[in-house]
Length: 398
Image: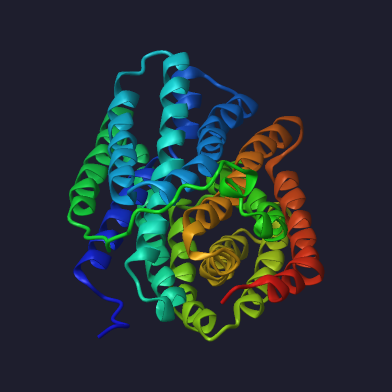
């Protein structure tokens, strides 16, 4: 019973996480069209505006880790969740681009806090012996949201629904998630002595090598999640791009469960290496779709969704392993810092991906942006093998 993973609080955390990410993913593929159709923004401008969200999340990540390690975690989680939820209502009333950008920045700050808090809380309420498996299921709730969120958003957009309706759907989803979050019961944490402020209270210094590898990996991921629909349209692929996210999420769902159990057996670096190989091949194939479609449209469409499945498997394998890697490098009183460092590395890459993807597409084409991202995945794989894995085995605490 001590090692029981599935508890009411854990289930409420899964539900709260799913509903938060559903509201988040519902808008991801729709916002480029919103900015283009409503504000007539170009690709590079869209990239800059969308990246404001990630930059804002990035700025709060290190501080959120410190706050979560120093104060009560659940109240901070609920506060950040509430702010994240209410900003969707702000989008509805944002009639000018400047106001939308301001709301987008606040949204990014709250997202940066709520995701770190959620990841830290779920680690607190699960047994250490099943951490990899527990994080796998927790991430799976995100993947399910990723499977249905983008598809739902694009379906609503293609069906002629107003952007106000789409924003309202995200708001209602997060409202339900906030109610679930309120029912989570967290273990008692004794008052800790707050140590003097220092750099390692905001960034897990031992996690920097892994953070660099993860950053390089998240750049093409950021390009994909934000621009894959526009890429398909650019090369003349007549498919429902919402299903790309569905296949990607299915791949993640399959792989997360299996990889979590392998991580619990200590095979952290082996799992990440396997995922890296899959992702490298997938991004090169994605960049090649522009040429394959000229040869056979049907074959390219099948490959397009197969790539999504492979990307889901690759990233699904790596996510719980990377998260566990950061946590294993940190003492228990720095779990929040470890989680924020993990997510900060990811956010930096996502932000760079948004910016560079839009910029490269403006001066060239989206396939060149994906080729650039594919090259970065090779660098990430080489760096992980030569630097990150040896460093982890030398410095891990558990």
